[in-house]
Amino acid sequence: MAVIHVTNRAGEQHTVEAKPGNTIMEILRDAEMDVEAICGGCCSCATCHVFVDDSWIGKVGACSEDEQDLVEQTSYYKPDNSRLSCQIE
Image 1 (cartoon, rainbow, N blue to C red):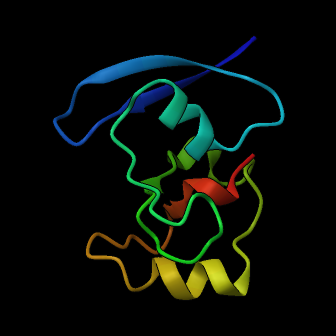
Image 2: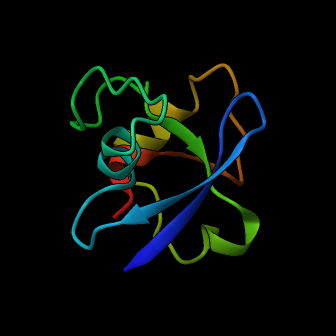
């Protein structure tokens, strides 16, 4: 099984098992990581905003226009690394 290396807001590092076919948001939620995801993964709220490491950003696919519009409005937006975890599988 694949794993995801997560650094939370407090700087704590975790390794989380990733089930194929699930979004990063679902994986983080199932691992009881602190991801709000108010819209439940519908790409309509941006409360599942994450930063993707530089070494992985090219591997997770490009943002849709809707995702880009939402992520640009977040407080911690980083143009090269910000994504919505509900949109990454």
